Length: 493
Ligand SMILES: *[C@@H]1O[C@H](CO)[C@@H](O)[C@H](O)[C@H]1NC(C)=O
Ligand SMILES: *[C@@H]1O[C@H](CO)[C@@H](O)[C@H](O)[C@H]1NC(C)=O
Ligand SMILES: *[C@@H]1O[C@H](CO)[C@@H](O)[C@H](O)[C@H]1NC(C)=O
Ligand SMILES: *[C@@H]1O[C@H](CO)[C@@H](O)[C@H](O)[C@H]1NC(C)=O
Ligand SMILES: *[C@@H]1O[C@H](CO)[C@@H](O)[C@H](O)[C@H]1NC(C)=O
Ligand SMILES: CC(=O)N[C@H]1CO[C@H](CO)[C@@H](O)[C@@H]1O
Image (tube, rainbow, N blue to C red; front, side, top):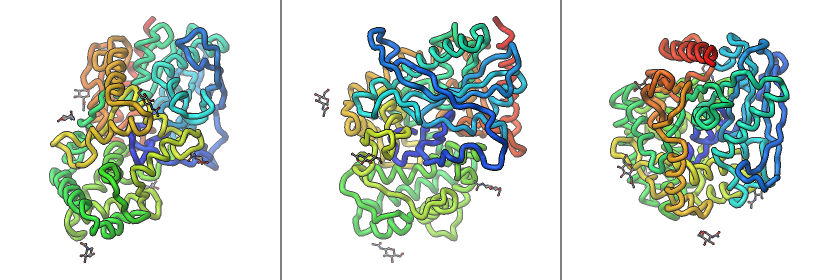
């Protein structure tokens, strides 16, 4: 998910496991179990958790949602724990058809499968609302303690205490999978940490550098044309006389309004996000999550950007945004808010508020633990206008968190988990060469017991999604490699 504050909040895959941290796409969850397919083979259940695992004097509790399927379980088999992230859990990950990668492993290895929703996201509400005061109970450390308690209690209930538990996750939950093994090695036997950003950083300028390289791999001209387009946009947006034309060019839902530098940064970030999001999920097989723009890929971007019949690069970029909005996302127009309108939405403290499913919560985690702000500070990237300062100030505006507090929180995260120097065993780190998040991941094997798997040409969490005929051979091999590691590790004591 990009989280950053984003704006457009795409919660990316909100779906969770691989939420990716980029925005929040609204997903119709009534549809999670595809109609016409067989009845769900999983159950929804709830477990009681402490509000604060690190204060023995605080006895307050709440109920956490999880899904379970016994379909693949064979007595004596392992237990698989899919970790939820910055959005509601999506039942598509439990459905055998088409079957995401972890379920195919479960079938072969006879595993019992759980998927646990992250505290404060989806329906798992530890507090009555999302006030900043209450959000202090939202942290990766509390979430890991939830998982440890889940593992302990459920194992006892179901006679699985001596079973081997394997944690899975993609993106932020990928990091949680690695950290669950790091922090609770007596409970978690191994972990598959896909596209996991293990290094927290405020200035995540590398993200857009990878976007550049990913576009260049398709066509060396492509990122240069995007840069030209964006330079023109930045120039035109300075002059209010151009607002009508910009509104029309990008098919904005309402007339462009810019009253402050932040409004300008906000709309530039939102428009750039069309390309960022497309790169992050390029060719990922996400239709089972009901993602609408799976057919909008880097090829689509570069096809439009090199089409001279559309006019100069600025008009080509505008044409791409219209194409993605209308044809892929099925929206009548591109929703342009002002910075303040978005801020007001983000500051709504209701779980049913505009960003109550995850956007406000994730923004809080970026401001207190991770940063991950996708800034335009590097010269080697195609965009401009939404630099570090803009992102840092959002923490102040949203939560009254100062820059100093923000930086201290990010340092603490790296101190606590070890950043790139994670020291543990039996964790595999798949990474995709065009996934901008790999820049914060483990990019080469630390040891035989901490292997990295490099998948050339794939994007965010690709190895987690259901296999299909057109997958790159190296993606198929990566899934197989993970399976072999699981087989090996499950034989170990
Ligand atoms: C807006 O675009 C039209 C053509 O689409 C052009 O004639 C006009 O000059 C533009 N307005 C400004 C202020 O550039
Ligand atoms: C993507 O394209 C394929 C092939 O044209 C089509 O079958 C599929 O329905 C499309 N998916 C979406 C979400 O539009
Ligand atoms: C927060 O969102 C809820 C649900 O959309 C809405 O009813 C409420 O008026 C909003 N609160 C504020 C302060 O805007
Ligand atoms: C953010 O990082 C980039 C390097 O990737 C650097 O050039 C830039 O100066 C940094 N920004 C700030 C404000 O430190
Ligand atoms: C914001 O934080 C500062 C410093 O911690 C504090 O003094 C101030 O009261 C806070 N303001 C609000 C509105 O909470
Ligand atoms: C893009 C990237 O970071 N790739 C790395 C993934 O991991 C392998 C090790 O298996 C590295 O060699 C790649 O550089």
